Length: 332
Image (cartoon, rainbow, N blue to C red; front, side):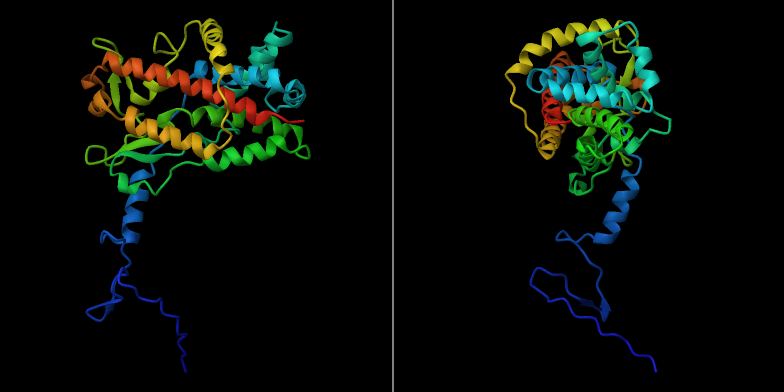
């Protein structure tokens, strides 16, 4: 004899959907009447390709790392020495040695911090690559009712790598990799388009945080992805190459005095909230909303948008440097 187990009934309230319709169970819905399960499956389908390629370019990440070094050296030089010792055991140490050849003393250590911050981008398509650690995306423009879903693991991996870096019991090789990811994720999540993307009738599968939405820096200039426009806020040419070391040195000299007056906020969730607000109110506004899939039709950005973008990028990189330095205080 088949015995059916009676499941407990969920209490019905006036705001609950009616449990029966025409004698059949009614599917779960949200308060707007959309079937919850179907909505979520549809959302996951749309968002599965919402993957940004990178955040700040090498200049931006190196600035974050070097400003973090300044902060830490001024407040906890013992932590700097501990990090130098840990980095000597990095499994990809040869890469650092090549880029630091001929350097010594404080200049070498500061440069090392900058290279640590960009290392996760340098090792793409290697065994250390973790593509979904670079972002934590929510819908910022369009179908914002889908913003309950976050694509990417940046938030969880920030916490995990912070714990690994701080653990004296962890193998030094593991701590060295964690330190690089810590500096990198912190920088990534201060870039507004690593927190937000666009999903609407025009961008049914998302604009992938602006990586497939094309604009131009100005009239007559080559097309580039909106995401790349933000990434390269500190590159005067807007393309890879140029005098990266010289650019970083000049920007570092300009930014360092502003860092001193900034109080660190150690709450990672607050950093995400800040980037979310910037993506909504600044990133996806004005000419950015005219971005197209067709590179040939890419619209020019206005001077006002470019001025705003640069000002935000400067504030965010400085904030990231201050906060990364504070996060590393006490490390031994």
